[in-house]
Image 1 (cartoon, rainbow, N blue to C red):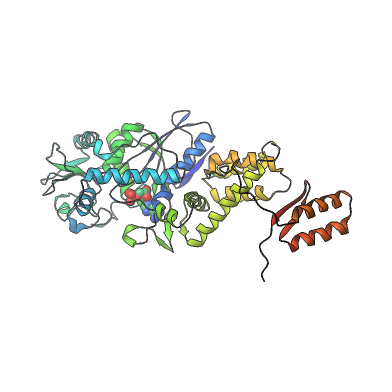
Image 2: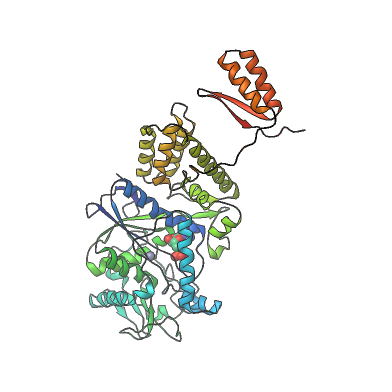
Length: 473
Ligand code: AMP
Ligand code: ZN
């Protein structure tokens, strides 16, 4: 059974689906006004790992991931609350629609390159405006939200007593301006309380990405999108909500307040947050100026699945520091595993090494302890007691969890290795000497082979050889 750390209770939780046989998961998705960086991808991998473990346990997955193509208010207050999509479209000189589709495609390409399984639904915010309006109207009718003279609608934070349960930010401790930045200079003028936030933002002078509403033209606040979509696509109770740790506040705190206030009970059973990817010690972020894209790594000659392997080397709830050395090491490991798996595949088939399978599955179950799972895999690689055919079966089987395509090179023609002149004869002579137990002759022939650049190793199955690195002159 999978156990995960639940942010709300701050405890390990046994993940038992509310509906037997189906795990329902909502993953906060990308904001598509720019390329996602590999830090974003680390967070998207979190729901993929949950997906793979759920399948391992015979559960059907229902994963929904939103595409934010509207409603992500500017962080910079100076922009007076202009929608980020609209601002980016203006900057790039194309329509917000084109811009969103371009970056959305790039998002799907990145996920595919990292073997992240597609969600069952990718609702777009721009196509769910009606849902959001219906939710906001409901919150107003229930007394949890109020309209303002500028056409905005605010959530009344004080109407939701358990506000702060996720982040620990209690209303009486929140100071003005903390967290809910980006609602424009005017916003605070109309708020009844400084911790209230905009569910709907009056358009003001903006004309792009603006919709009609009962309160006049405007656009939705970012947090309302995830409430409206998750309630609509997963129902009034669903199992897991994921996202990066930065979303815990205010995004998820506000989302929880909106959803729970609308239906009158706890909607999300478990909140799971992934820690940040750092680049040379600092959080990877556009604003820090240290973003790396999947396409950058591919252009530098890395296999995108080496990035996946690197991510697996850290547990999701710990920070992970991206370095060139770590990526290069991951590339090397991946290549070695693929080569070995292809070699092992040529040995007679043998049953899987179940002790290793159980160790790996137990590590994934234990709050996605992927570093421990990788330790088991490395031990299996080296374990002399496990025959090559069994190693092949086990690696190939466990790849359903790791997602590294380790069996990719099986059956592929390996480049022919040409023996130096005379070496074939020496190898035959040595094999004959060994079967005749002429050990001195066998050693002499090994030296003779080494002199022409062929390294011989003796195994239980007989001698094998490889081309030695050219000796330094
Ligand atoms: P955004 O497109 O900015 O809304 O971010 C998409 C997802 O990536 C969110 O779940 C964020 O929490 C997550 N995220 C942003 N920066 C990082 C980072 N450096 N490391 C890991 N996850 C991140
Ligand atoms: Zn969200």
